[in-house]
Image (cartoon, rainbow, N blue to C red; front, top):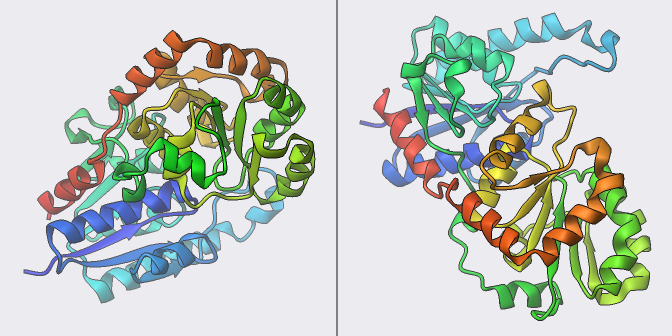
Length: 363
């Protein structure tokens, strides 16, 4: 019997890539599964999901604008409109189950599905659950989580500790360190830092690194620097005097190569980044984005820091602390090994399959 599954959510790569990984795993278990994505019109998922080979419907939905209160005037209308559209999508597609991965489109779809008695599953990626997921969790059949202690947000009997899905090209990458360094034009004899601030880059990480470029080159260390588009030209100009030591990119498509090349990673603490770092087992310095909803990135990072599986610098402390923490870590072989071992214990390269099986179980 053919199963019909709706996967709702998106907004950022952190929601979209795990959602696609779950869809691929469902197809692996039951190739004839009919999957429909529902996202927010105008957001990244409307491009990325069709590229992955799946159909997607868009809802006219946006989040609360905290910085400009006047932009929220149309919000109640948009929510009402998206709930009506969600109802129509459910009526037309008639899914057996609806999966919510977080992001704007998740709430209207799961809310309507729950009202219609359709089983729902939530994939909560962060260690601090968002408000909408807490509401939806009351009626969801199962809640797949990546961190322990989530019973403070959800009913304990519904929780399944699955980990966060990681893209196959990272979890199953066969690239060697030599290949990876060669790809970036770097030397296998030197230590390498990989700095990444999510797909759009991170202002504090970029501004913290720029004054350290000379020291990095003087110490004969290499840097792979994903800046995001807004900072790319500035970074390229700043790195120019240091030749082959500093490699600047606005975006890196081959993340498995970048991780493999790195001795130390400097990163934001989004759920997807952490899931990947656990699977690739790298010593990492986290700089959580402080304006994420409910400051969940700090919560994500602290979950690892408390297990001696990562280091942390507050966003506002990057300029004062990055230099000493980064260079002392690179000199401390024992600490690097400890961080590598501990973060590796937290990774689950099969999270996508585990979640897919949970989805099929509740149909």
